[in-house]
Image 1 (tube, rainbow, N blue to C red):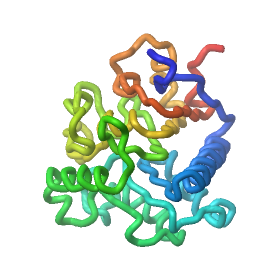
Image 2 (cartoon, rainbow, N blue to C red):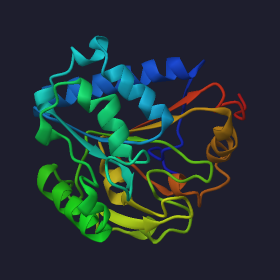
Image 3 (cartoon, rainbow, N blue to C red):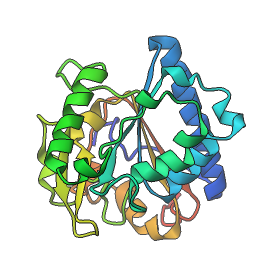
Image 4 (cartoon, rainbow, N blue to C red):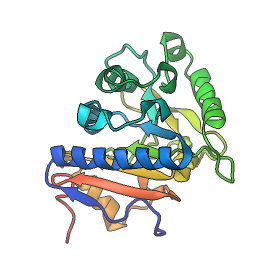
Length: 252
């Protein structure tokens, strides 16, 4: 693995609450730096319980009052193919915990599944998201869209976003958002593809809980290079934020 591979030196926080605060500080720093440098902050958000706590934190006055929301654009790293009103919708969670509580302009939030019609046509929804990324984001030299920050988690099988072991999406280089089939319910998802994650200016992995300790140990041992997250080669800054429970299997 090269020096930019995602399994670099982690930040280990004593608790999930302190992980959340550290993630919020990094998010605010990235946001402020991006707006100062480029007058815009393009961020892809993750679903899941650990990001949920981060979004609640960002919606508090401590964080929200520091953010120039008119210069912020929010996207998704992946989504379940369900309507946004469904309890399983990542965007529904993001909207409830963050968007409904801050003055983000309505057209600055970009869900992968914006309505029930999109949930009934996931291939069309993925194609539209691909087109959105190509038109709204700056581009790398190879044409890949460039996010200022992508938030990601890691599953117990080593997946990140909805890039699962053995998925054809892991080999995708020309499309930037695709549908995938999983064994979870619901079985269909839409995910960003490796070129998008690898082109980001910064990627933050948030990993918490004792149930993640085994996969974290496998990733940081360097002995399992075929795990989806270990195959990524981001060119920008990579941060791993772990709570003590997730880091319990690490030596040293």
